[in-house]
Image: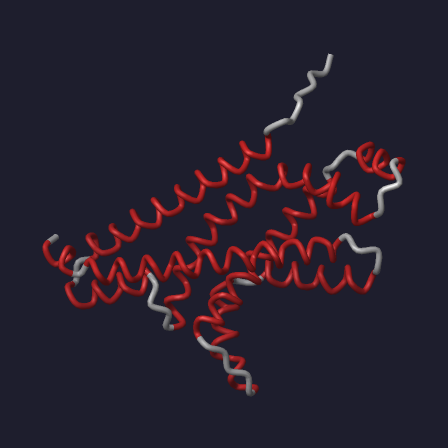
Length: 220
């Protein structure tokens, strides 16, 4: 434990890197999810086809293979990306594909009567989406996005394989120096768990915030 305490700087540095990549990737993940979801619902068939191919490809292939392909295969065709760029791109594209289906399903779940009422009020398609559909859809998609954020935290462990000095990378370095598997990876497990709980708590706060003012009508 003394060696673990003396090497606490490694774990602090790794934790900060993990948090940084999680937050940046989360922003891009949400943006990609909404863009792809709108593409899946677009009235133009080519747009729907392109976004469907994107969603199915990134959901149907392994994240670690995607990261390796971006980092090791692209340079073979003349495209070289920085490790940080590769990490954010890989995490965002992969988790964004899952998020796209969450957003699409939430939008589709809005009752048709709500949309018909907005049409009757002569709202434009953009106004209907912004004022009627999205406020209801966001409430439905928040729990699933909370799960995706936790998956994103766990997925950041893979970026250590493309030379990012994240929490998992620092734990491996500590273990190579001191051969203390239980202490090093036990500490990492605890840090990941605590970070995930903070994110889950934040999502629950957002859920309660979006539930304010919602009238629950009991069906007789």
